[in-house]
Length: 101
Image 1: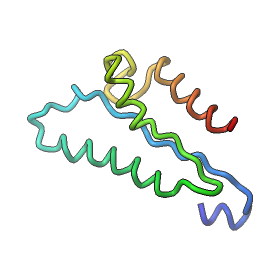
Image 2: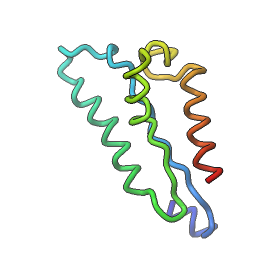
Image 3: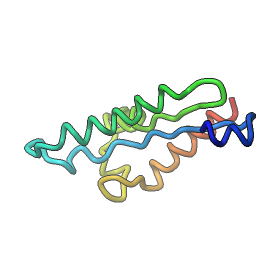
Image 4: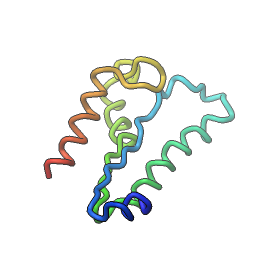
């Protein structure tokens, strides 16, 4: 971002934290499950630290966590990680809401 701002000081950024993968994809017995989930949550936390003047963000990690409480992850994804059309609309609506503020 610093390098881009050198050429265009007025540029803005929209940072996007990815959605959570299907929680059933990695078994509880998998010794790496905590590592995988921690990295995902950690990425969202690190992006949030960059939010500020000229930098907005959409935390789909948190958003997907909320959605998965109401709707099965399998109903939101085409595979264990990638969004289907339903979840893609959440992404689009979230980004649009940020841009029109």
